[in-house]
Structure formats: C-alpha cells, structure tokens
Amino acid sequence: MQGFNMGRYVPPDVEGTTSGNALHKKHPLGARARHLKTTGALIVRFEMPFAVWCTTCTPHETLIGQGVRFNAEKKKVGHYYSTPVYSFRMKHAACGGWIEIRTDPQNTEYVVVEGGRRRDVGMMDSVGGEIVVGTGQSKADAFARLEGKVDDKRQADEARDRIWELQSRQMRDWEDPYEQSRRLRRSFREVRKGLERKEAETQTLKDKLSLGIEVLEESEADRVRARMVEFGDARSGDRRAMRLKPLFADAHSAPPARVGDAAEQRKAVLRSELRGNTRAVVDPFLSSDASEWRPESKRRKVVAESRPGEEARGSSATPENHGKPVGTAPLASAALVDYASDSD
Figure 1 (cartoon, helix red, strand yellow):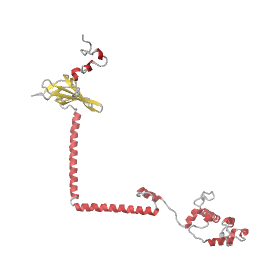
Figure 2 (cartoon, one colour):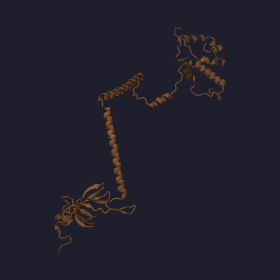
Figure 3 (tube, helix red, strand yellow):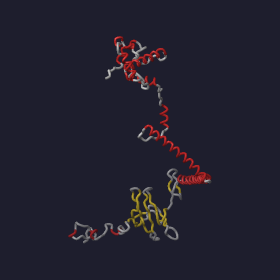
Figure 4 (cartoon, helix red, strand yellow):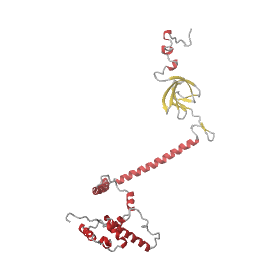
C-alpha cells in the first residue's frame, strides 16, 4: 500500500533525518523544475494577457487569442528598482516558434519581446470616450508627438545655422594666425606686468610696515571704507588740545545749550583753554609739547629762581604763571621739585 508520500519511501533507520525527495534526489515540484538548476527556469502555466500575432508562422502570421494557455518557462531576467522582471518563454504548437513575453513593472503591463507582436485594437479615450484605432494612443498624444517633431526640427535648423555662423567667424578671426597670436601675447603681457607690479607694491608695503602676514588684494569695499575715514589736523596745537582734553566728560565743560549764541560759545572755549593750561602747569608731563625741545639747564634755572621767597608771596610772579589769573596761582607750587646735586 502506497502512503501519502506517493512512493517516496523513507527507510525506518533514516526516518526523521531526511525527506523522501532528498533521499531519492527529486524536486518537490517534480518535472516542472527540471530546468531549474541549469537555466533557472521553472515550468508554469501561462495565459495570454492579450491577443498576439505569431511572426514565425508562414506564409501568414497567425493570431493567438487572449486567454490561450501555454506551458511556459518562467525565470527572473532583471529588476525595476526592487521589483523583479520575469520572462515567460513558450512554444507555439502551430509553427514550433518561440514566443517570449516579459513583465513591465514601470507601466504595469506585459511586453512581447520575441516571436510575436501585440494585436493593436486601439485604446479608449478617457476624455471623449471614443476608441482610437490603429495607433494605440489617444489623439492628444499623437498631436503632441507630431508637435514635438516639428519643434525638434526647428531647433535642429537653428543649431545648424549657429554652428555655421561660429565656423565662419572662427575662419575670419584666424585668417592671419600670426597677427591673432601677437594680439593675444600682447594682452597676456599687459596682464602679467600688472600682476608683477601689484606684487612688488605689496612686498614693499610688507617690508616697510614689517608685516608678517599675507596682504590681500585691495577690493572695492576696502576703497569705500577708506574714503569714509576722516583724519583731523596734525598740527601741534591740535595734538596739545587732544592731550589736555579730560578723559571723562565734565559737567562744567559741556557746551552751552544755545548753539546759536556765538558769545557764549567763545566764553566756553576760553574757559576750557584756561582749565587746560592750569592742568599743564600742575602736571609736569603736560607742561610742554612733545614736539618742542627744552634744555634741562633752563628748567633748573626756572625752578631755582622761583624757589627763594616765592612761596611767601605766592606763585603768581613765576615765569610760568606770568599773565595768568590770580585764582590759579596756588596751583603752580606743585610743578617740579628740585633736588640738590652732589657738587652743591
């Protein structure tokens, strides 16, 4: 009595360790998988998805209707992204020719690639509802394809005219190669000399200022920013006024509220100058301009003359305070201190 294994007998000593198909070296699909190890093809039952004209039939092509079934060899021939593309290859019994149909995942269709061609029955127009026979495409697609051909022809004509124009211009410009080369060399020479001049100026600036950094080329933004900078007068009087100016703003030195009053402005200027001169008398570091040179013997002489008996009468008679207001005389006593030398 045959069991449910259909003759795949498994001896008791190996039962449970192997199967009947493996023991008898048979595939579970039987004869359908006879080409699986050689060509990778599996025999399946395939049904024609549409009517196909067999091109191998002679003397006239034979029509294979939709729904006719064949034993086809199915195998994977490629991928569309991650979707496999399968091929179904079958033999037409009438002529013995092979017909191959493949899946088209991109368009969700079948495509006849060998031994036949799809019967063209037209397609239903989704807009007007009419059937377009003989083309397989709608009227809009046909006109769009025709207009595309016209546009392509016009673009080709324009490109051809442009190419001819460029060729004629090149032939005209290079009719005398020596003159053209001489003109190019002259322009290159001017550019090279300009670059060398800029490099020399940059190196001179780096040597003059002892710059240890790379000096970049001047740009238009740098020129605009340089023009916006304004420098004051570099005369000694301005430098002196800058040094005598207090570091922190004073309420008494604030300009008067009435800008239009010229007399008040002059008074404020004289008052600030008088206060600055007083600071110069008190502070020895502001007593003279840095650009003026005064011998040391003269300064000692001035201090020696102002020492005997001047402290009793005040410092209003000293040469430094000659012509100054009396209110500022007591501030001059703290000008300089004279130390006795070893010779004395």
